[in-house]
Amino acid sequence: MMVKMEKVAKSFGSLEVLKNINFEVTKGEVVCIIGPSGSGKSTILRCLNHLERITSGSVYIEDELIDERVSGKDQLKISQKKVSEICSKLGMVFQRFNLFPHMTVLQNIIEAPITVKKVPKHEAIEYGLTLLRKVGLEDKKDEFPSRLSGGQQQRVAIARALAMRPKIMLFDEPTSALDPELVGEVLEVMKELANDGMTMIVVTHEMGFAKEVANRVLFMDKGEIMEEGTPQQIFSNPKNVRTKSFLQKVL
Amino acid sequence: MDLNKLMTYMPALLEGARNTIVLTVISVIFGAILGLFLALGRLSKNKLIDRICWFYIWLFRGTPLLMQLFFIYYALPNINPTLTLPGQWIPALLALALNSAAYLAEIIRAAIQSIDKGQMEAAKALGMSYGQAMGRVIVPQSYRRLIPPVGNELIALLKDSSLVAMIAMTELMKVTNQISTRESNAAIYLPAAVLYLAMTTIFTVVFEKLEKKYSVYE
Ligand SMILES: Nc1ncnc2c1ncn2[C@@H]1O[C@H](COP(=O)(O)OP(=O)(O)O)[C@@H](O)[C@H]1O
Ligand SMILES: [Mg+2]
Image 1 (tube, rainbow over the protein chains, first blue to last red):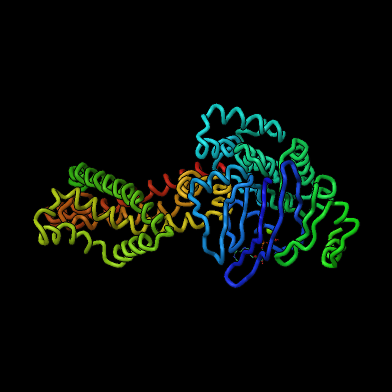
Image 2 (cartoon, rainbow over the protein chains, first blue to last red; image 1 turned 180 degrees about the vertical axis):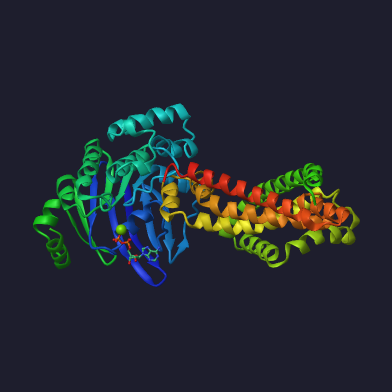
């Protein structure tokens, strides 16, 4: 099992954002999470790489318990080194790219491998260039992010995450901040990744992408996974009334 | 005062001005280093560190610089003779650096806090520790935003540095005072003022250039 959440709950103060979340992702699987805004989709991803801490439940990455809490109390001691190790296994792509604006494209990509993983610089550069070629931006390696279009920035952000050689990629609405004409190039890169066998969890509003690429779709509403199934089941034959009404609105 | 007389005093005034610049620049450099640590302390999750840094800033911003200078120069030796600092340069530099650190700390803290939260998240998601994220991602991005307020602070400090004339440190103000007394003619303050203006103008221009240079990525 690449990712597993067991009875995960998360509150911000008195606001319950995740309730009894249980799900698993197997190797090579592409799971899309859909649902209305504020339903807790981002929070699920952020609890996997410790950007947020769960309130209770357990989280496993590659069958290893990486967080277990009961009512906000740690049941498991996790060092900074461990958190860093977990993050190296999980690549994250944000809605707003979050590239480092003071670094060039290539510097963005080699920064973490060098500082976190202590990869020799020439190796990091070599692999960085390979990744840039993969996302079709090798000629932009010395540009600053501000000089790139949104779609290009997001492709760099994907390359930056891949530079850590993650086992799992997390995408949090990677195309939501893009102009419509730039969405395709990013989805194309993501499809390629999926075809290469990358395990992916993708929060998205791109139903076309979910239909075409996902092995499984989770529908979330109000902090719960309301329905889960193949794209065929979810899009053609939704069982839950809230899934139905959500899909009616977005399709 | 006639022009010839003025010209004979010019070397002394210029040397005073040079000391003023050296004093100001060194103070700002040390003040910025200490200020960075104070700012990081204020942002620390450790409550005690935060409180200590808050106290420092509160103390040095809440009392007159002249009093801080007198405290270092006159009071410390009275408290304990081993606390006597040699000469004028060291107590003057110490007072200006400690004082500007408090102001710079707040400037640096504001600049760090103005960096988009997504930057820290991206750094952490890539596995960086808090220290690595600060050192490699957050603080370097704050540099450009720091340039204008640090320029203002430098100019303010350059003018405030005239206070160290009170402990007989021979910078521009002290030199001017001496000439004025010797000549019984306060007109010498006019060229001194021009020199202060020239220095503040040079720093303003330098900082505007710096700001342009660092804006390449924006
Ligand atoms: N740091 C936070 N503090 C308080 N509330 C938060 C925080 N982050 C998210 N929330 C709240 O949690 C809920 C779920 O947020 P999120 O996971 O971002 O939803 P989604 O990604 O599905 O739009 C929302 O109501 C949001 O306002
Ligand atoms: Mg979200």
